[in-house]
Image (tube, rainbow, N blue to C red; front, side, top):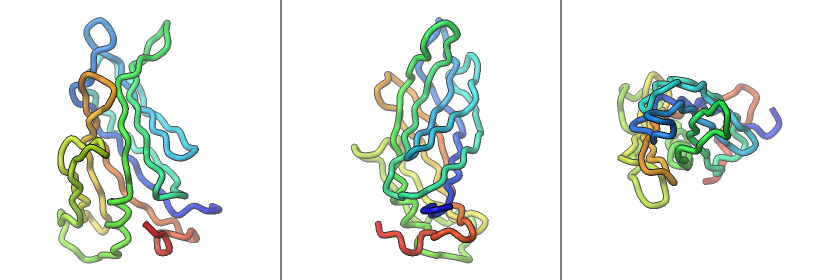
Length: 170
């Protein structure tokens, strides 16, 4: 657990209007890179609007490291085709968690993040209080591709015996 601040539950929910890379459809999966970690979802066959609903767990050592997300089309006889990528800055989310809030009503927005040129958000994303935790759902516009978005959600998890976010400077 050396140097780990906590965990980030990274939920890959679904894809919206993903690019066609096979004859009429694609077989998409998502690869998530965070620092030295690389995790991936299962392949959804023949679907440009896939529902993954998969939870990946990332251990966090550096809150300033971006999360890189890349969507691929699974191919049997050739290299998998890239279907776009996105980058997530978790700093606004970490700022919300560091506020140390408690006892808020469920659904209360703690922070709103606007889409801009430096992030991949396709619309406003809010850090929401939900059952004692702050979660952030994001609709990410994929870059380097003609179309497609991916819906993800992040949630911070403290680990007993780890540093946590208390001393983290943003």
